[in-house]
Length: 262
Image (cartoon, rainbow, N blue to C red; front, side, top):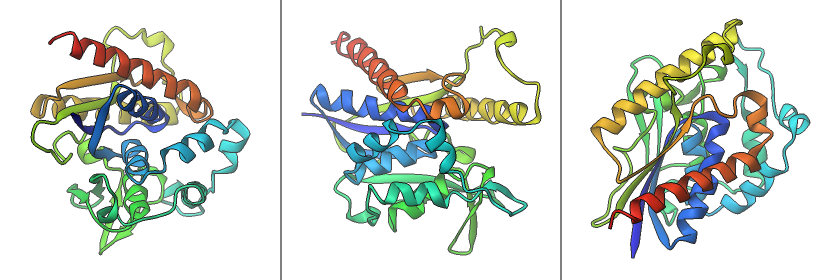
């Protein structure tokens, strides 16, 4: 039996690649015995662990630009652009909420305490409460109030939670990071001419650095990587099928390489 402990990094719409990666692992006979994720990784990983990945995938692949924009519930608050409730409600209509401790596959989501900077770990309680906290991108989504704390995106404290996935004897640690920065990237192809684009890239560089440090501390047996500059903006959210297939392709190549070492 080939058991896999799976760690999924933060990464916005690039995280849809995790769906194809999970499908490829299962197709090849691997059993995913635990999952840990930050932000997008918590979203996809949690839904998979809850058994709802098929209905979630079907919904994602039906989204176009107009439907994506219809899910944006703009906030009148000064601390966020989007409330985030509309998209969570849409997901819950397809994937019922459960308590994490009741799920068949052990799952860990990470968030960040806005005031202390501490990593906050969810291994119990309502699944979507944990997911909503983990995906709270600063300035984009409203922070989550939880047990007297104010929580924001898990990627701030632990972009790639390789060290948080629950291990079992003899399993394989597989990590998928979608925040790799290409040092050869042509800067002329990167937009940094607006406040938003500079802020977005700054977060990307931060996530890439934290992910790289995480890999050095807890090196996975199999590492799958996707460039940060892939599938940015609304394009990514409305091209889920393409991103899912990219994830499948990358996981297949990584598994081929791993299996050829034996």
